[in-house]
Amino acid sequence: MPATWPHGPERILPPLPAGVRAPARRPGPLGRAMDRVDPAVRAGVRRVLTLLCILPLLLILAREAPRLPQSPLILGYGFVVLAGTIAMLYISYSKYDDPAVRELRRRPRRLGDFPPLPAVPRVSFLLAVKDEEECIEDCVRSMAASAYPDLQIVVVDDLSEDGTRAVLRRLEAELGITVLYLEKNLGKKHALVRACEIADGDVIAFTDSDCILAPDALRRCVDALVRHPELGAVSGHCRALNAPVSVFTRAQDVWYEGQFRVAKAAEAVFGSVACVSGPLAVFRRDAIYNYLPAWAGDRFMGAPFRFATDRQLTGYVLGQKWKGRALKRQYADSPFVTAANYPERKWRIGYVQSARVWTNVPARFRPFMKQQIRWKKSFIRNMCFTGTFMWRRGLGPAALYYGHALWVVAAPVMAFRHLLWAPLHGAGFLTLLYLGGVVLKGLVWGLAFKIDNPGDTRWRYRPVMSLLSSVLLAWLLPYSIATIRRGVWSRSAT
Image (cartoon, rainbow, N blue to C red; front, side, top):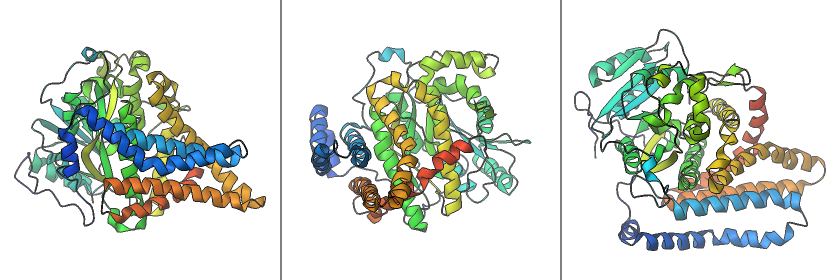
């Protein structure tokens, strides 16, 4: 069904590229039947079905467990990684609920600590852009096509030097959006904070300049916040917009699906999603407003940290109960602190699977590597902030967060040991065992993709991404540490 624009003359939303699948509007027969049964029965059925699906993996673990004491170094890493994958799959498929669809089962005991939003809160939808002439029009049009009644759209041009400004001037006149044209390049975080200065919404949402949103994506995220006052922020669900281009982009598309549907869903069960990702990040105003100057002025290892750092902004929501007062004191003279002093709350953060957004992933190797290095640097910086308090949020959130961090830190060590040391010392079988485990993990994630996307054959590309991650991307962590003080404002995915 075509979407029409709520701003300006009626227009049709540009179609998604061939091969990009829009989300199903209705659940299948099994989903509809499950929605009609008692919630406790539905939860029990989901647990049983999930256990049946992961039973082969549990049998592999049971078979290998007695051999661990004999070869702890050889078998230990693979055993722990597989056990962690099984736990994440079980949590996400048996316990996750979409907060835009139904009431969450795990909620705080004292809901009165969280003020409710209006039934239809005002939403400020913000975007920062620099030199994105080719894709900016589709992005802004998809923002304006959001099926939401009370929407303020603010786009900030951070001194683009191509034809981006001409496109924005035309869209500004046609769609009635607000565009700020900066005369000095500030960087993405500072540009977004400039947009926040004029944002008047109860909810502040962000997207990236290379994204296209489903018309109902923003509304679903806002619905989740309205229905669950304890949620200070939610993340949408992102896939690759340019997936059909090559094997490389198809592999990234399947990887994105797993990172959201499995990893973020598992974190959302505990209300502790560690990164509200840039393609669709939706926050309550009172959860982030006081911390925007800290975000823009973030410094690390003696230098400004220029990356947009979705993780860091998320960290301010997750950790403000313990870090909030100190951050507000540090920026006590900022208008973002003096205008309104919001209480520090132990917010939860969720994930809305039904809120779909598509982003252009890197189609060539060099931009892909640059993106991965940016992400690794953001991970490092965030570990030094969020890692200091995540243990306070409970056993589940701590296990998922620190377990992932340990896997990232151990990855280059394991790659060196299995791919370099082992062959040089005549232990080639260890290398084959390591690569076989990587492929097995990729197949497990690929099958999870197939369950969620029946009939889609792209699940076959997931082992490719696993191999790429273990053989190549693992080495980027030490490089990112060594170059952490370098930073550029770039979003190119070509």
